Length: 443
Image (cartoon, rainbow, N blue to C red; front, top):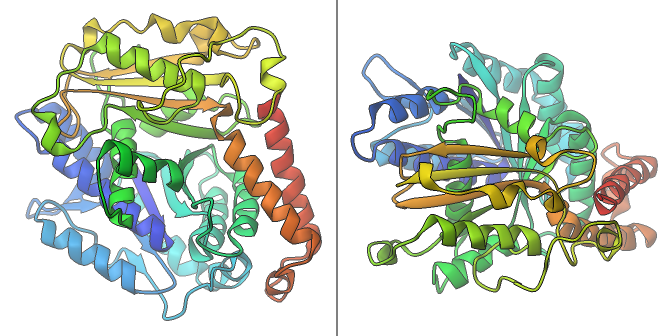
C-alpha cells in the first residue's frame, strides 16, 4: 500500500525532500530486493523508463523552495518529483495563519485537491495521506490546516497523519505562538495522529551528537528525515507472518492513537552519530535498549545527558507535577528495531506496566516492529514513537506565550482582517488547554 505525501510551505517541502532522499538511498543499499520493492511501492511510482517518482504533492505560496526541491531531486539521479505535482504562487502568506487558512487555502482549493486526487489514483491501494508542515509560519500552518480539512472531507475514511515541525523556542516568527495554537486546535479535530519534531531538540542533536559546528536548516531537516524514515520504512509487525507491513500509517495510528483526546506523538532514535564515526563504533541491543528506555522515562531526546535518577512511579502524584517534569508517563509506545541480530533483542523492559496509564494494559499499550535490514547505514538502530507526556512542556510554554500576547491584544488585528475573530482564538485556546489537561492527568 502507498502513502501520498503533501508537502506544505517552506519547511514541509524541505523536510519532505530530505525524507525521500533518505528513503531512496536506504532502499538502494545492498542486495535486499524484497525490502527495496516494499519501500518503493510505499513512496514512489515508476515510469515506463524505470524512473522513481515520489508520491508527493508540493504546495507553497512562493515558488523558490519548490523549484529548489524539484531541481535537487532530479539531480540526485535516484528519484524525482512529478513534473506537474506542484503548485505555487508569487506571494506568500506573510507568516499569518489567517491569511493562509482564510484566503490562500480557499482560493486555491480546487487545484490542490486535483493534484492530490491524481496522486491518489496512481496508487493501487492507498495506505493514507501524510501532510508535512511547520506550525510557525503562514503557509505551512494556515494553508496546511485548510488543506488537511479538505482532505478529511474528501477522504473521510482514509488515515491522515500530520507531521509538524515545532519552531525554536527563542522565536523564528513574532506570531509563531498564535499560529501554533490555531494549527494544533484545528488539526486535533481532523488528523488521526500528529507527529511532532521540535527544532530545539533536533538542533541539540546536530550540535552534541553529530558534532556539526555551523548548523543549517538542511542539517536539522536531515535529522528529522532520518527519524521519520526509521519509522516509515518497511518493518515486520508482531502478526505480519514474515511479510512487511502493508499499511504503515494505519498500523501506526492503531498502535499509538487509541483515544481521540491523545494524538500527539514524539520520536527518538538511537544511535545518532557522524557518518565518519560509524565504522569505528559497535553497539549491542541490551545497551541501546537500556538507554532508549531511560530516554523515554526521563523525557530525554538524546542519549547524552540522560537523567538516570528518574524512575517510573505508580499513582498520580508524579503525573500531576509541572508539565514535562519528573517521570514521563505513556499512553502507548511503538518500538522499531532495525539491523543485525534484531531477533535476539530483549524488549521486555518496555512492557513494564509502570510506564503506562492504568486504563490500558501494557500488552495493548506496547507494540514492536522489527526488520533485519540495517537502516541508513547504521548496523543497529532503535526508534521509539511515543504517545506520552513528552510534549507537555513545549505545548504549555507555547500556550502561555500566546495567552500573554492575546491578553494585550498584540497583533490580533492582523488576524481579524482576514476573517479570524477573537472568539476563534478563545475556542482554540480552550481546545489546546483541554489537551494539556488530559495529558497532564495521565495516571
